[in-house]
Amino acid sequence: MKDYQTITLEIGEDIAVLTLNRPDKMNALNTQMRAEITDAARFAAREARVLVMTGAGKAFCSGQDLSDTGTLAALDLERVLRDEYVPMLRAITDCPIPTISAVNGPAAGAGANLALAADVVIASTSAYFVQAFTRIGLIPDAGGTYWLPRQMGAAKAMGAALFAEPVSAEQASNWGMIWEAVADADFADHWRARAAHLAKGPTLAYGHLKTAIRQSWEHGFEAQLDLEAKLQGGCGNSRDFKEGVVAFLDKRAAKFEGR
Image (cartoon, rainbow, N blue to C red):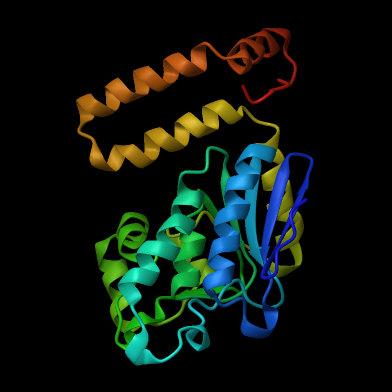
């Protein structure tokens, strides 16, 4: 297993758990953490069938570590976003296996949008999301302007970004921003059960499903039908499809191999 300084990565039973591990900084993102998340996500894609991101301590991620930026006069936000955030976010969104953000506490700024980059977001009821950018004269970044209107709708996205007010986990779930909010007492067991379910599923189909849904925003109806047919053809030639049909006819649970 790889050793990291700002995160931990544990893999077992086909589940990779990537934990942001700077609890004294509320898991704020610095240059090293972004590089390590990028590396760990790519490694997990090869070694596991599900990737889960969560935070150590009371927070998921408080966003950019402002103490890591040096002098404001020397800060080149465009370079940091292009060179450090983009590879990290692409490592997650392009990951061929299902990804889950298990949001255990506050997710602010770039930390909130890092969470939203996963396929499924599960949050504890004490968690919240806040687009804190306008508080320091910035706009939402790290994919925020992409994910928010698609998941919350334009009206909620605009309000969340302009007012920079916290959105509770229950609000986020009700607005379609995340998949579900779970009581704190049940949170850890719940996300692990969700991850275990996906780890036993048809990994190839999951990857194609992710591609189809993500590309649907850029496609017209005919183009999307064509993409569906192409991807379904790949699923139809897989061992998992054959196993799924046989298991259905035998009235038993399928044992998918992920190929």
